[in-house]
Length: 297
Image 1: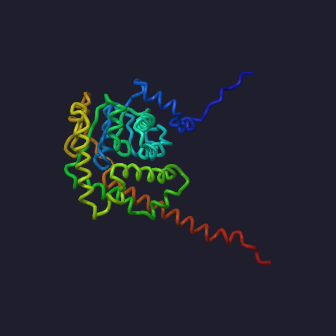
Image 2: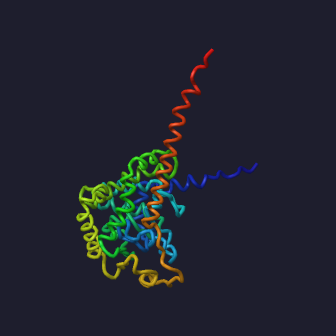
Image 3: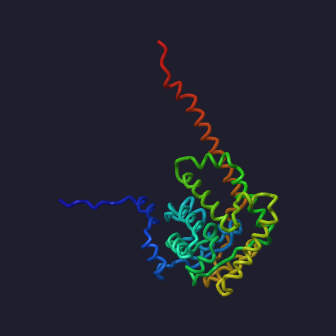
């Protein structure tokens, strides 16, 4: 009798996508046909990166890499090992190893924006010399800082609720702890040893805003002018972006997503989940003992 072919569940295939050997990494970085990244955003988090991600997908440059993909896999591509790979990259000293890791992580993507990817502009230029680069910039360092402290810093400062949800053994909570460790290393690699605690400290506000201005100047210095679009978040739109990328301007407004208000709402949801976990733990801790206590005769 005919034997039915064995079918491997799609989710197992998806979660093994990024498990590669060193020889496979070498093949990726040395094969020009594998270098799919066409557009790369180099603005830091809270500079309009998620809106740019949405716009790039609308213009036909998806799938687009973003921190949300590491946490939630919104595009359906596996990012199971990405936090570990970015951590390895942030700690690496050898440039060849860094380039191989960049190529490995970004192999499935046509474009990318946001941290942690945008924190490595020199490596991105080396691995993708023909890509087009976009620097999203807010109107001022103060505007960027206000967005940072009103969103990411709010999450970082709510340690009790975030620390609880990171322990939930379900996707995507299982990734939060790994991402937090990874981003600490990435930020330290760009802030000479400091991390988000430094950036969110009101006493370090001037230093953090200076870092932002220095970052923008650095990107404009190292990326060739004909490969860089300085995109003014809140002012520019599809007209400037589509013109730079050589595609038609869509008949729709430029997206505005992942606002400070949305991040604050996400924080409320994290708190509610944390409170639910605490309530469930208290319920079982009080009742399990009673359920298993000896019955009086």
